[in-house]
Image: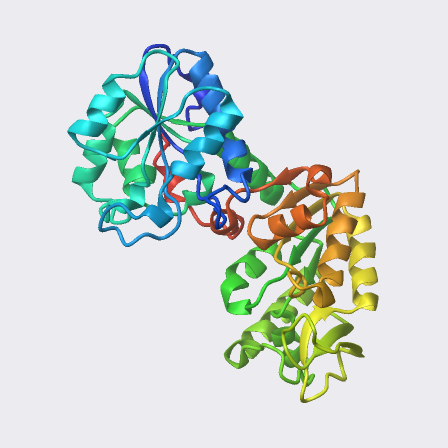
Length: 396
């Protein structure tokens, strides 16, 4: 990020600093934050600015409100309470996002003070990157810092528009995310093993294409593997399979062969007749999936093969589970991959957001991973070589 200024270059004392963070955290039925990973990830930037005497104004979204005004279900109030507990200082929540009331709250801040604006998506102009809304946000502050990597792939008012109106800097999380993912793709330690799972080939075809130019081994799991198995001429029963993408999957297999990339697909799978905790399961060969069953996890032989490949890696990138890991009958494959990634202490291990983060947390191995991305969509776009609007807007 040599062409982007970071907060280490910012003299923040006495300045009002508008900081875009990603506090899109789940809240349970009791109104408590269920997972504060993203809040904790932003703490180094917030604490640095507060210690430097900045007057910090945080802006974030949460969920998908209608954009027609305040909605209690998507309020940042639970976030403010958790943030206050984590920081050990007062956090003022402004019901107003822009306008006179928000300006009054911002002007009332003292050095080292902290203000959190309500959910920025309560105003529909945010997602439209409305110039007037961006101007109103910018009017609250002297300086802008973007530390919300998870939203960097969106050209919204608070991620792109404001950066054009104020001196703009990257926060610590933004800097670490971009540097880690770009260095992984540009100069990975070898062997470089990439693991992709999830439901659809169509969702990850660009990522697959990019990784086939970079990786030494590409491991495929999750429901997307059945489109590849179909491309090999195998019957996949009732498994989720994208018939329109079979030819494209075959092209990817041909590309892997041309590039000398080892492409690993399941040799056995766990099948059931329904996605249900109580479903009767069996392990079958990937060549012999019953017509009335669906594959819902990789099998034990596949899990051992994948773990062996991961153990030999010097760099590992993982995005997407191996099966329906949320249910115990179908969690073993994802658990095996998580454990293999965690056990390879010699490798750089990068978890690419989304369900993979949930998996390493569920199986208690998050601390053993080198880096866990907070941005599923943003990390995928960066890996596939796309420019991120939130990052581009910070460039001088």
